[in-house]
Structures are given as C-alpha cells and as structure tokens.
Length: 228
Image 1 (cartoon, rainbow, N blue to C red):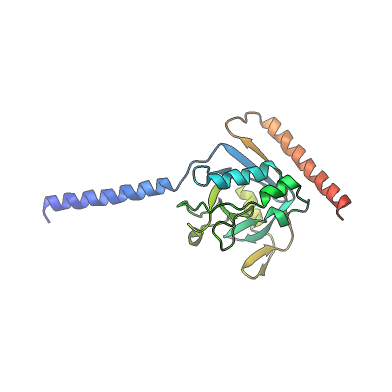
Image 2 (cartoon, rainbow, N blue to C red):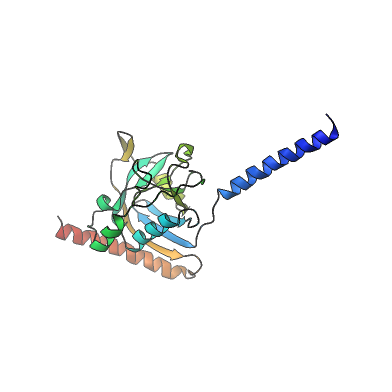
C-alpha cells in the first residue's frame, strides 16, 4: 500500500471518528435551570427539563406542575430495570381536578421525537398509538431501552433521587397484560419547583418542602371529608 493511500485511509477513519463523537455530543442536550421535585412515599425525585429538545412538551408538563396537577397522583407502573410510569392526572389523582387543571390536563401534545437516547434517569412521555396523543403520563427510565428511541418524546432527566428510584424497584408488583404494576399505591404526595440560577437559600427550600408536605396531608383530609 502506498503512503498516499495510507494517508487517505487515516483521514477517512479520523473523519468517521469525529462524526461519531459529534453525534454523541448532539444527543446529550443541556438541561434548563428549572428543577421539579416530586415528593413520594419513598423519597424525593428531582428532575430537570430539555427545552431545546421538546419545548412544547416541557412547557406543558411544567404548567401541569405549576398548577399542582401531579399532587395526589401516583406511579401506576413500576417495571424493574425498565420504567416507573406516572399515571395520567385526569384519572390518577385522589383529589379532584379543578376546571383550570382539567383544561390543561386534557390537552394533547405533538410528538417531539429526537435522537436523545432512552437510558436510566431519562423522562419520556407516555402516549397511545397516535404519535400526537401524549397528555400528562410519563415514564422515568430505570434502565436502558433502545427500542423506545425515536418513538417517545424525551423531555428531561432525573437530577437527584436515584436512591428513591431504587426503592421503587424493590416494591412488590403484579402483572396485568403488558404492565408490571405495584401491588400498593405509590403516591406523589406533593410537588414543587425552583430555579437553580435563582435558588440560593437552602433553609427557605426546606421550609417550602415542609409546607407542601403539610398541604398534601390537608388536601387528602379534605378529600376524605367531602368525597368519601
């Protein structure tokens, strides 16, 4: 093989490597500064959003959080090594939705599919066969699931709370058709959000968490009183 041929092959290989590296970088999007926290029976789960990947989905989910739609909701599915899936808020909450909450929860979101990979910690929208049928149910990946890539809208990832996910993976489950479901309800007691660029006082955040937890208890107490 002549030297010119060897140089050409080396350049071609280098080009392929650069393309692969650039492709890998492109599939690791930057998180926005907003963080959402779900306070569950088993501990907190914190996650951030990918606004550059799925802007409409992020806007919708964040609005549902701000309206308190996920409070008293639950994880209806926990499949170890695969997904923990949050129920649709329309049917998954114990407290009834008000009119403003229901209006947002009934919306469907266009399928914002991307080349981001389904790996542990990723947040991915649930949907029916219609690619534009996602509403409020979403999955937290408990393992790598490449067969989901490009089929479901990824909009964020878990930033804290992997120990909580590991606790969820240990709960007793039962199988119903294609779903592996917990035998006891895993409640989302309350939710809150903050901005990592603006949040500087940890004490204030802890006070907010306690207040929200107390609010969740009061909501459930009122629900039991008014809707036995």
